[in-house]
Amino acid sequence: MTNTVCADSYLTLHYRVAAVDGEDFVSTFGMSPSTLQMGSGQLAECLEQRLIGLAEGERRVVELTPEEAFGVTNPQLFERIARTALPSDVALVENSVLEFSTPDGARFSGFLRQLDDTHALVDFNHPLAGKTIRFEVEIIAVL
Image (cartoon, rainbow, N blue to C red; front, side):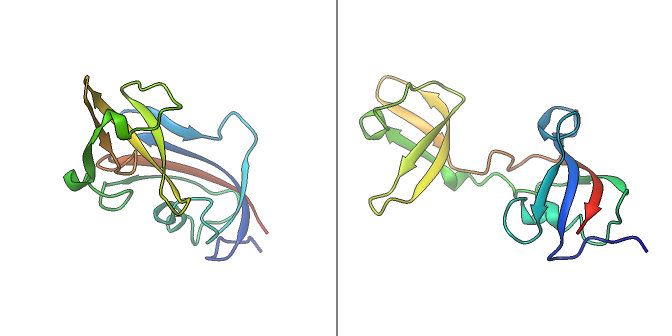
C-alpha cells in the first residue's frame, strides 16, 4: 500500500517554486531533497494544501494565481520611510531586502524598491505577492 500525504505527515520531497516564465525562486531538484513536517510552517500553507493526497513517487505541477498563492500586491504595504529611520548597519541598495526590528524585538523584512537622497520606498508585501507561480513537487517518501 502506498502512503499518501496527510495534513500532519512527515515527508521527503523535491519541490520547485517558479514564475510561470520559468524563473526559479527556490528549487531542491538537482540537490538533496527536503524533509518537512506538514503543518509546521516549513512550507507555505498554500503549497502544503497542494500536497495533501499525493502518493509516494507522485510528481505534480500546478499553477497558482496570486490569490491562491501569496496574495495580490497590496499598495497599502508600500511605505515611504525617511533614510534617517532606516537601519544604519547595512548598505542601502535598491532591489535588496532590509531587516527591521520593532521596539519589542520582533523582526520583519521589506524590499527596498526606490531610494533617493532623503527617503526610501519599502515594499512590505510578500516577495511573491502579485505573481502567478508554478509549483512542482515530487513526493519521495511519506513517513
